[in-house]
Image (cartoon, rainbow, N blue to C red; front, side, top):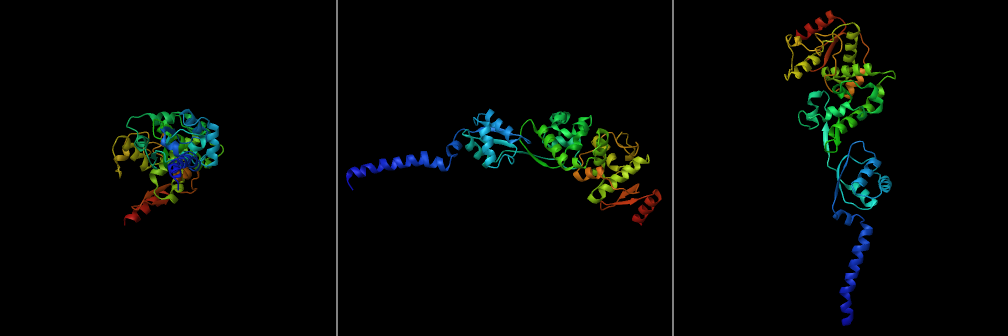
Length: 335
């Protein structure tokens, strides 16, 4: 090997390395240099379409062409699986950004709505400070609910909590948590419960069945008993009998900040329009967020001749057709 050849080795090696880094590596890993650039924070909210997300990325300066980005999102099959949350994305061409979206793990805000949640405690479930009005504002806006529900929504925004289906929702953090919750939870309610609404359902019918569903939620622990309890309450309304639901009385005391695990006869005397021992018919609004099972039970109640029931120590209920039968079964349980 001549000295001239030896002198060329470092230059040739450097040239090969340069070509490898500048041409081969970008071809194999097109996102390599994009990931090293400054990343931009972009929030994708729940319910955003691929088109809306692409436009949000364009407005943030991540890509130049939203339509091209949509095409790559479709090719990479993330157009319908993009999760809500806050993404950190480096600006680049559309395929590079689409690949980043596919690999990214967004920062999310998980919200869990539990069946039986009171309106007064939903803010804490959403991790909103006490007195925050973002949820109330979101409930007040009809457009946050599916279009099919607009004509059925109660006038009082607080009563609209019955259309928030209990579930855990992954939301994008930020000031729109209230809106996202209402939009996602009501849309899921429409998918799972809305199909059970009768064709002629109007605002009065739907509101009353929502109230009934909330009472069933407070009374029943066993799924199979929910339709029976819903039917009993409707039987009592038909016969102009008070509902006498202990769940409504417990709600009355809750509203005063007093928790009751069991009730005395004195407790049943509390003065409140929600006390169904003192007032006939349904209370003026729901007492909590009903579960899917309670809602379906209220919409498809069991048809029985039962008018009375009482709870056992195990959480189940004993049903009766007459008051005499009701008293006899109670005595038998205590003997």
